[in-house]
Structures are given as C-alpha cells and as structure tokens.
Length: 410
Image 1: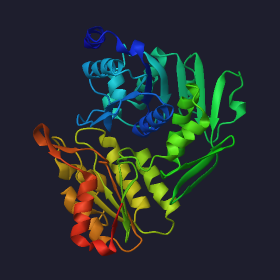
Image 2: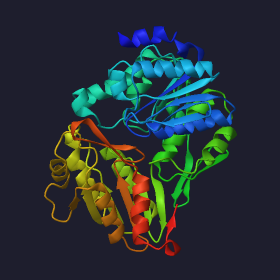
Image 3: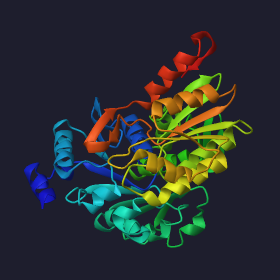
C-alpha cells in the first residue's frame, strides 16, 4: 500500500509528535483553527493540515488542492517537516474520503475529535450508515484520547469505542452522563448569541467569542476539551479563543453598512440551515437575501432540492447560481435546486448573481452567500479550475455600486 510506503519513506514522523485528528461533517476547519490557537497560546509550536491552509510553525500557505485531507505522501512529508522544525503538535483535518482511502493509516494520533455527523457524501459511501462507520474507523484504530460532541444525535456510536481517556462536551450534557466516572465533561452554561458574538461559561470562566452562531459554541467546546486533555489551563483556552476575530469563509462578515454581507462555506443541509437560523436569531426582523451555491457537479445530487427548500423557507429573496459544476451541465444543477419555483431567481454567472443580490438589498438587509467560503477556485468542465475569491468578488461588485463614503467594508 502506498500509505505504508509513505510512512516508511518519511520514517514514521507521527511517533515524534502529538497528532490531533479532527473529523465530522461540519465544523472541522473551525475546530482546527481553534485548537491551533489554544496550543499556540500555551506556547507550543504546531503544524496544521486543513481544508483552509497548511502551516509549519510561522510558515503558512493556502490549501489550493481542493482536498480536505491531502494524499498520503503529502501528509507524511508534512509531519516529517514538522518534526524537523521542532513542532510539538500537528493538527489534521480528517475527512471521510481520506479515511476511506486510508490516508489516516500509519499516523499515530494522540487525540481524535468528532464534531457531528449529518448526511453527506452519501453517493460516495453508499449510505449514511456506511458514512457514519467510516468516521468511526478513526476512533476504532486510535484508542488514546477521544473527544465527542455529546449533543450530536450520533454521539453514542462514538462513545462506545474504547479509549484510554474520553471527553464529552455539549450544552445539554450533565454529570449524569458520566455514570461510570471515567468520562471528562466539558459543559457550556448560560449560552448567549448576539450581533457582537457568542458568550458562555465553563465553571467560573466566561468565554466571549467574536464568532456568530450557537454552532460555534460547540466548535469552541471541542477545542477547549482538547486543551483540557493536554492539561492546558481553562483561562489560556479563553484567551486564545477570545482573540479570534473571524473564521475565513465561515460566517465571514464582508460588508457591514448600509447592509450586511456574509460569506459562508455551508454546503450541507445541516450547515446551511444553521447558517440561516443564526441570521434569523441574531438579526430578528431583517430581510434576508440569499445567494445559494448549487452543489458540486456529479456528487450528492440527493441534497440539491433540500438546499433549495431550505433557502425558500428561510430567505426572503433567493438567487441560485453556479458553484463547482465540474463536468455536469450547471443549468441542470441549478434547475434541480430551484425545482421550477417561479419565485426563485436563477443566474448562471456567480459574479452576476452576487451583483444582483447587492443591487436588490435595502438598508439593514442581510445578504448571505453560501457554497464557496474561502475556496480559491471554481471547478468546471474538463478539469479546469477558474481562480475565484468570493470575498474579493463581493468587495469588487460592492464598490461598483456604492460610494465609499456611504459604505463600510469589514
């Protein structure tokens, strides 16, 4: 197997690091960033592999591969370089496709974290049950420290895997969930969300995140549990997380006046609904304009009408546009999302769709553009990748329409 050759070639570097593996349907990249912030705040030198970026100490470069978990040789080489750079930790975002292709093999994980599991990649795995079991494989083969979102509906599946230490986290978790006394509990109490961010308490320590959404409480709890598992003080965790201003492409506020514009990666029904619900909860009564990415071509076709239905349910004005059609006809994808709804606007060109959303917005409206986040390209027919920067496109189209004296770019 190539994975074993890669490990041998780079002399099993994970044996000389503490490797943190983070998997789940949603929230992986955010938890990677939060875990990394906590470890660095505690004084450790780290390496990162995520769908957003790679990092070795202070050297950072963008993940241009469009792969959440790169191939076996890349990861083993990154880990070897981390050892050479005297990193103590490596934080790796682990995808179900990566596990399916054995990219996690021969990596000695110190800790594995599960954020949540909701339907995704069903066509690739064959069923939700197979997708769930693929995620579970990371817990089956690594039995040191397990960190699990107790409030997720599939948590019991992961709790049942044996481990030396087990941490569960959540808002609804209580001491009653630790009947055998062998589970550490991280519970957020008094959670509050507002336009300024998110607050909650753990014991007598108050966290004030600048990130929006209840789901970011769960992301923070996963990272805090990791910190506690590594004997990092709760106040160090607080200081690290409170410093995070924004998460690239994740509920990322690009424009703040005369209306707000958010860019969010959301590509699953669960993540899209949470993004929309967050806007509804925080900006009560505001008109919501949604630009909906239309799913990658040739994959997960089952979720297209669901995404369209969610947009029509939550949004006051819906524009469905192109995203990553690959070799599929983008108009066909858009029509599957819209399902011939006459109230839905269909604009094939994504830049034009964003421009139309900006033109249609009124003072104090909320525009949310989903599907691309901070990705750097758009994948089209023939394997061609068109450079794409969603944030930059928003700013460019916005400045065409508004005088800088009356507008505010975040």
